[in-house]
Length: 412
Image (cartoon, rainbow, N blue to C red; front, top):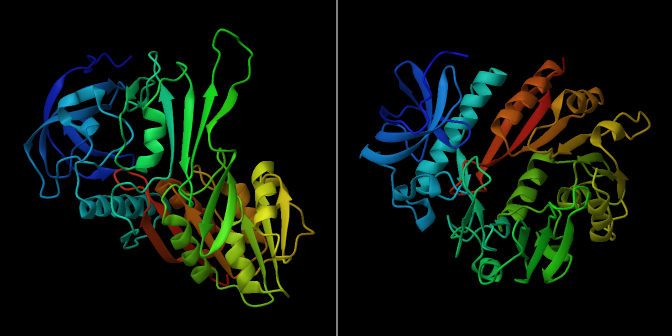
C-alpha cells in the first residue's frame, strides 16, 4: 500500500506534455504522472481520472479543453465526442487530431521507442496511405451487449458501446451488423473483401456451459474472403489474418519487395508468412531457379497459402512455429529473410535463429513500436544494423501504425 488517496473520479487541470506509446499524452500533477487520452501535446485540459494505478501514475480522459493545440479538430464520429466522457467508444485514439498531427505523433512515438529501447537516434516520417482518414478499414471485430446491440468496447473496459456506424470502417460492412439484434455476449467479425462482398461471422459464447467451446456461425457470405494485392488473388479465411487497411497489402508488398531485393536464383525465407502476401513478391524476385520458404503456425493459413501460390513451384511451405522450424539446421541458407511477427515481436529466440544463418538482409515488419525497438536492439547484438525504416499510417484515427525495417549485416 502506498498510503496515497485514490484519485479515481477526481478532475485535474493539467498542462499536457509529450505523446507516449499507447494513444495518450503525459502530464504531471502533484508529483504524479497522468496519462491523458483525448488530449494533444501543449494543451491545457481538465482531465477526469479513470484509473488510479497506485504509486506514481494514473490514467485520465480529457473532458474539457482550456487551451487547444493547433492540430485539434472536431471528431468525425459522434462516439468520440468529449461530452460523452467514459461512454466514448474505445476504438479510436486520435479523432480529435488532424491527419498531419496524427502522423507527427506516431513518428514521435517510434523515434522515442527506438532511442530509449534500442539506443538509436533515427528520424522518422510516417507516410499516409491512399484513401484518407475514413472508411479505410475492411475488417472489424465487434461485441454484443446484453440487449443484443453490436458495438465496440469502451477503453480498457468490457463494457460495450453500441454503434449505428463506424466512420473508419467500410460503410457496407457496418450496415450488415448494426441493423439487427444479436445473441447477447456474441463476438462478431465483419469483412468487406476486395470484391466488395461482405462476410459476417458470429461467435456465440455460452457462459452457462462451463466447458462448452464457442460456436462460430457464418451469418452472411462464406468462410473465405477474396482479396487481391499487386494484381494477384488471395483467398483468406474470414477468421484469418489480412491487412485491415484496403491499401496496405499493395503498399506493404511493394515496400518489402524493394527492401528485400533478393537476387535471381537466390533463397528467401518468409517467416510468419500467413497466406503468402510477401512470399508472392519474393518468388517473383528469385524466379524459377530460386527458392522461397514460407513458415506459418496457422495450418489454415498455410492451406490458403498453398492454394494462393500454386502457380509458384519455387515456394515451399512449413506449418509450425517459427521458433521450431528455424531450429532445423537442414533448411536452405537464406540470402534474405522477411519476417512479420505478431504484436509482441520476434524475440530473442527467433532473432538468434535468423541471424545465425547470416543473411545479407533482413526485412522486419512490425505493428508495435516498442516491439520493433526491442527486436532492433537484439539484431544489433548479433551484428545487424538498421539501414532503412518505412513507417505507414495504416490505422488512421488510432495510435497504431506499421513499420517495415531493413537491417543489414555489419560484417562483424
